[in-house]
Picture 1 (tube, rainbow over the protein chains, first blue to last red):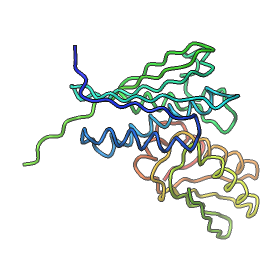
Picture 2: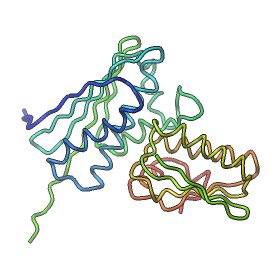
Picture 3: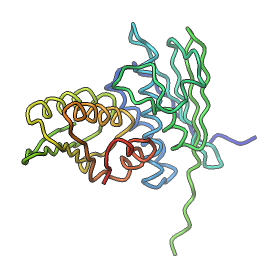
Picture 4: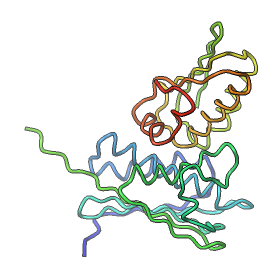
Length: 147
Length: 101
């Protein structure tokens, strides 16, 4: 069973002003893996999409909380879990379809599609009325030593 | 994020600087829509060279710009996207609606 090397957890209110904070926090944590700029960009983007989903959809009538956990595994995989205790998703498969959105016309419906393309794997578990958890993983590649 | 516009005959260039995410999206959309209303250009050019970050909320902003321009018979062109923003643009079917240079 693979070992955990490091982890961090944050909780913050589902405010849009915290989207940038969440991106910066995950970037700062990921730096210990010496990722490329592209890998950092991919992580930031996927985290931004997942956190934005919580802010836009999870708590329509109240200001709820988002829990973000990042785990660094010994094989160089960075696992990111983003959880809310909001209204949940009725049909996860439908929600994951490109361009599908239950938000207004200003939403592109591409959030899950982008998480899937920018990370190596994406799992979404949700229960209507209870909340949603998104688990994404990305292997950060070890670079060849400089000669 | 910061927004600025330059008006030339028949076109307007909107320059975006900073992070284009859900938090910034409404402000960006309002700015673009009022710029279009003011100048009624045939072409709206959105210059992304100043963006340090963009996610799919930026796609929403560009699609809103497309709809506003289509309503007046005009077109949108996106230029100078940095690498991270370009990767997001290319992950979507946005190039079916506007030229991305």
